[in-house]
Image (tube, rainbow, N blue to C red; front, top):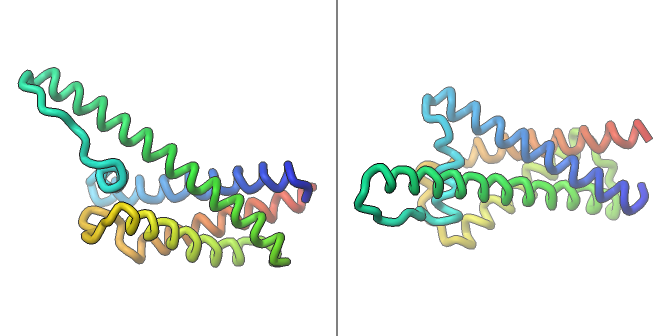
Length: 161
């Protein structure tokens, strides 16, 4: 694969994998009857609780909703950016190491690299308590799925070209 195609494929694969993780946790939250609890917990851990004290209840609620939406948007962009970088890493790393990226090698990459990135980011923000955040099994399975999707996408792209 040439440089531009490899880069484009890596970014697309990462976006697909990141989108799959977002959908999995969205559905998981819906099943628990706690919609959006995972992204809200993550945004409060990574971006801080935010909020300002406003005495007027209506204006305070409006500001709170806008700030929450801003945090969710920021978290979503960071999430997709991280998975784009993971997709690039998968495509570039596997190609440089001579490993053929497919569903299986992608799954291995996803479960290891994705989990290292997630828990590394938690360590950077000094998060000791994981209350409200997805458990380790959920994180591993979601990253396994994301990696498999990334590897499968790269495999499909290779066959098309």
